[in-house]
Image 1 (cartoon, helix red, strand yellow):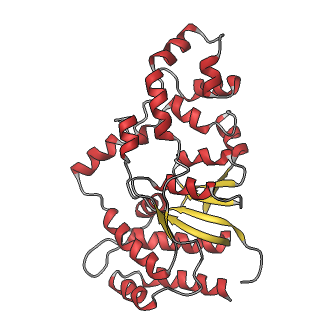
Image 2: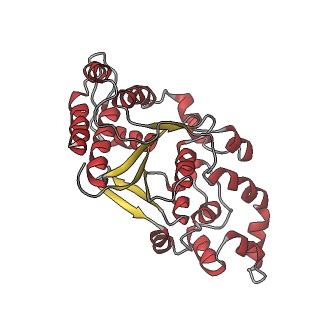
Image 3: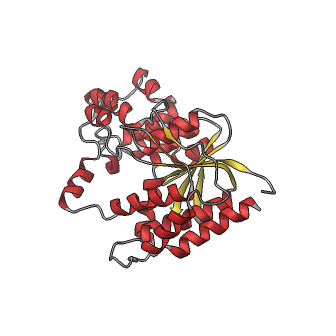
Length: 298
């Protein structure tokens, strides 16, 4: 391939697949199964490979979307998603299974770790290198990674055509906090999407103000000039703050298994890929990605 080569690219598979499911018009294969999330993800991948020109690529998978160590630390972790799953089957899950087969047929590296989420896989892979890394996700928990200067989070705003390039400076400007302290901010203000209650009575503005003044959660807790009200709120949430650290912070040393990130020049198994493309009516999306890979190889 001629021309400059970009950073290592890591894609949060579940994040982009769910985004595709809600952004792409519904479509079904001949057997009636929904396939638009698969189509959307493959089109996202084609766009990212063309725009970012990465040197290597991993698609990070959730081996466990609600790991036991996080639930043990904070039982409320993602409980609302458990309830939603019990009420009706997740319509994206079957498409994720097929997508993994398609990625394997392409020869695109996937990565996962038993008992861990994709965010932990990404954090571990990013920690192993000092090369520039770009992480594509709609999960704000991964903003924690930009504390390392070699990591940029490409946060999805609209598909992958509009991405916020999140680094420490972006975090500081967006939230008014030190750029390497997103975890502390999330702990204080909470995150309903993950079942994090936060510190009662401390919302976004107060969390931002406290971190801007004291620099970190440790600095806040050690401060001697806090108002009695804030100190009482922090004291009442002391157990939560300890437990939530294990929940919010991505793990950087999980046992990742998967490919080496080499971007294929041609499909690993063309026969399998073409069979899957026909079976699930995703020929156009598969062809687009094949063309992108061929162009990279030229």
